[in-house]
Structures are given as C-alpha cells and as structure tokens.
Amino acid sequence: MLKKIFFCPLLFTCCFFVSAQSYKKLHFNSIVVDTHNDLLSTAIEKNYLIDEDLSGKTHSDLDRFKKAGVDVQLFSVWCDGLQVNPYAWANREMDTLDAVAKRNPDKIVKVGNPTELLQAVKEKKLAAMFGVEGGHMIENNLDNLNNFYNRGVRYMTLTWNNSTDWATSALDETTKADSLKHKGLTEFGKQVVKRINELGMLVDLSHVGETTFWDAIKITTKPVIVSHSCVYSLCPHRRNLKDDQILAVGKNGGVIHLNFYSGFLDSSFDRRTDLFNNSHKAERDSLLKQNPEPYFADMFLFTKYPEEVKALRPPLSLLIDHLDYIVKLIGVDHVGIGSDYDGVNSLPQQLDDITAMPLITKELLKRGYSKKDIRKILGENFLRIFEANTSK
Ligand SMILES: [Zn+2]
Image (cartoon, rainbow, N blue to C red; front, side):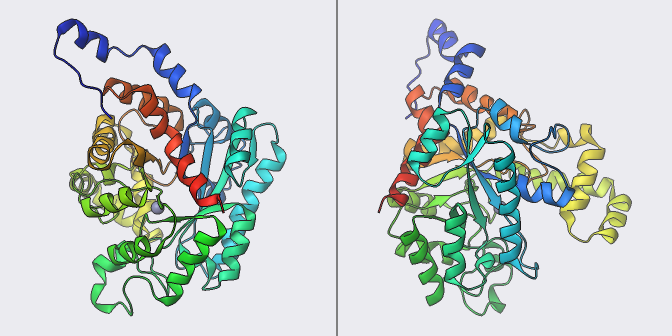
C-alpha cells in the first residue's frame, strides 16, 4: 500500500529524497522477475548471440540482465500465426537458449520450480524459463503442451495477436468480430487451460480477447498471469485490461505484469507517432514496399531519427501511474514487471534498455511505496503465483 505523506516541508524533503545508494541497494537485494522479454526472437532474426555484448543493438543481453539486477527472466518464445511449423519454430528458439545456458553455466541456468529458482538466485545466476507467446505453437495437440512443459515452459499466452482454432485474440475480437468462426474458448480451448493447470504452468491472459479472458478466468483452478499488459482506463488499447478484468485478476489471486511499451502506456502516443510517420511518409512507404510489416519500417525510422523519436516517448512516471492504478484497485499483491524489452520499438524516457530497471525501484520509493511492497512488485508476487501453480 502507499504510505501516507503529510505535507510538512521537512518531511516532504525526506520522503522524496531517494539516494542512489538506497534504491540500488534495495533493487539489487530484491528478487527481480521480468515476465516478458523477446530477446530470443530478435537474436534469431538478426543472427546475434545473446551471450555477446549487444549494447546499442538490442535492449538486453546475458551480461546486461545482471547489470539490471534481473534475477529471473521469462524468455518469450514467439512466432507469428503465419509460420508454417510453429511447434518446430518454438523448439528452435528454446534450443537457442539451451545452447546459451550450456556455454555459460556460471551465468545462467534453466529452472522449473520455485526451489530451483531460489537456488539459482543464491548462486547469483540468471534463472531462466520460457513463456510461449501464442497457443498456435502447440498446433492443436496437447502432447506438444506436455513437451513444452518438459523443456522449461512455465507459462503459455493462450493467443498472440492471431487467434487459434480454440481461442480468440484481442486483435481479432476487436477488428474481425463479425467474421470469427467462434469467440472465446472452444471445448478444446477449455481442455488446454485444464492441461496448463494440471502441468503446473501458468495461464497467461495477455493478448487474449475479452471473451477468451472471461472464459479462461472462469475455469482456471490456479492464479493466472498477465505477463505484459497495462491499464485500459489510462490508455484505451485492446492489449490492456479494463477495470472489471483487473478486478477479476485480483479475485483470482493472479498478477498483472506491466508492459513498458509507450503505446500501451500513453493514450496520445499513437496520434503523435502518426504525425511523425506522416513527416517521413515517402521514406516509410518505400520501406513498407520492402517489408509490409510496419514494425520493421517503424524500427528503421525510429533508429534513424533518434531526437524526433525521443520527443514521442512518455515519461517514466506514466508507467508508475499504471502501477498505482492497479494497486488502488486490487492491492499491491497483484502487480509486477513484464517489460517486453526487445519486443517493442518505443519505451518511456530513461528506460532505454534493461540496465535502466533499477530506476523503477527508485520511482517506487519516490512514490512512497514501502520496501516490503517494492519487493512484492519486483518479484515476490510472481514467486507467489509460481508456487501456487507448481505445487501439486
Ligand atoms: Zn506480446
């Protein structure tokens, strides 16, 4: 809960003065969990090795997790719905991390349960797990879900932007509502949720449509994770959660991990980005001819015009506003961090790469959160739902 701050000038100074030493000490002594990072997909796409220094090229790499004070990383396993063999692709991504762990046993270790996680933290190694970002990667086969679990997958996002044959996504429910063959979870979709519960994985409700959300939260027997989403009331984007959904996650005992993407935090970001795109229209159009996926054109232009792009970025305080909102609605036990580093092309001011993570702790102290509550936000809330899902 937020501490009460009285308006005495002396106390005012005390409350808002956060020394570098105090926030860093708290941050690096806490268990910090980030539930969403897309470095694996980025590394494969660009042919990078994640155990090399990728500063200036990516938001994160193996050594920068340590510099960031991140103790536990859920690595996103992702491919879009157009991938011909999504199950094979997912396994290839997992092979990539397994090879990194094999080459760097003193720095990173795969963990599968809370005991192994805590042991890794004790040994000062990055505790790594996978989150499969999109149910299409099981290719409608529950055996594939079992195999994912055996390889270290500890959450599955029921859909990415594409719907599966058994669950509809936020994108499709909001843009193709009339042409959908079904909406929400089918009977097989319910079996998927049941199997995730039985295996001891977490059901991830980021990216899913509202109907899927309500179907899943009604039948899950364990606390859910929302691995990388923000607050709809503050930024009305389909990827964010409405108040009734936030309340339902609180009631379920789950945790909402906040995404750092500017477009999910700042309701005016898209409008300001459109103005930027219009001012570079000719260049953008030619980039789109080379690759019709706007993400790549945006990335190119965002890198080429850093000063203009800097002005598009919201302040770091807006991320904390989203966090405050959830805390006020359902309490401090239900919020965490799911950065989406290496999966987004715009981040709030100051959060340039993963090494900026301690600034979150600094902002939380400035807002008056107690050290106990900050430790919950940074990682203990995730540990609680991880324990609840993995204990038989
Ligand atoms: Zn995502």
